[in-house]
Image 1 (cartoon, rainbow, N blue to C red):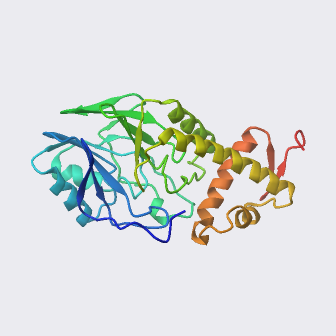
Image 2: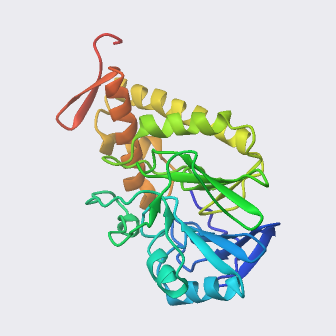
Image 3: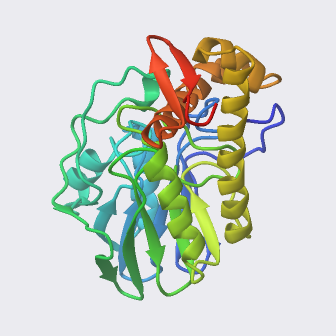
Length: 295
């Protein structure tokens, strides 16, 4: 969860964080976005790409355009289409002529706890990148790494020249990612984490929210362990008689900001659906029970 003592961060200002990578922070902080959405500009030559253009706020758009300077924007890439990530793609494309290239469009009615995370119904990519496909410009190559789970259309982007991975909302250092059914899928999320763990070429992650992750494989290993621990915790809760999500969450997330409990409940549901698929639990109405085979 987010710390009460948030780091001071400049908004609407391009910061150089590594060679070939600059970052512009959108002014949309929240318990779910930390200090805000981080838009990344890739390339330090005549051709630049933007990853996760963020919300369609004029201040943020102006900062991105100012950061481009004389460079030509050749691609606008989105990791997924939650409204804190992709809405600025359309106006940025209109002002620069750059194509929107990246994740697939996805629009669902979201019954989850986040009004700001509803899907961007106006997202219209010029080209959808399949897993392993790349886009490139002067001095840089971005390769799509399919990482469904947080959303079914989530992509990460690997900057081949530097070993950096732009991890979107899939992996963040300050918080675990919300996995909210029906589109969010815990089985897919765990498989995507395992896939990233196998990618030894990635030496640093730049998430859409929060600080850079300088020990990515250590963090991903810990995240996999955390999710398995949550599974065991859920099974223990059921065995103790807390068979509904509303009964489980206050116990499992005691000490966590209560504003995050609805989102935590969605991730608990995602775990329960995964456990149900594996025939470890059964659902009866709103209650969950350990399967007789393992009881």
